[in-house]
Image 1 (tube, one colour):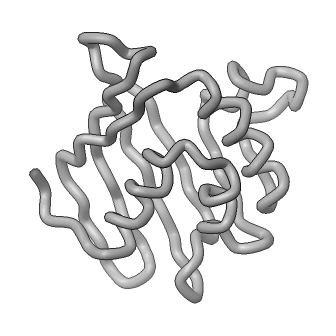
Image 2 (cartoon, rainbow, N blue to C red; image 1 turned 90 degrees about the vertical axis):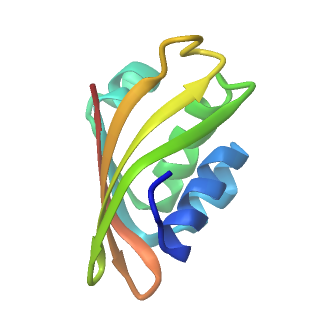
Length: 121
């Protein structure tokens, strides 16, 4: 397992909790979250970037409702200043025996996520 900092560990724990309120609380009021999954989970939104805690909470509620189990196996975590690149395998009831490979680029500001870009492979 990769060595990770407390804030990356907290990020992992919060997403694995599947609690939309906790997920949204990690972001600044004006934080952004960008992912191709947004279009699949919330197609009527018409875009792949979320703006602000309310949209992030709504997306998390929709997306996380699909999971009965969720675990991130962190492969690498590289941080410099307020930026992190976290590479992991997502294990879940949806993925079965074929865990998804994911890379997230996270920028923090004052202890909260200012932006997150997610790449699913």
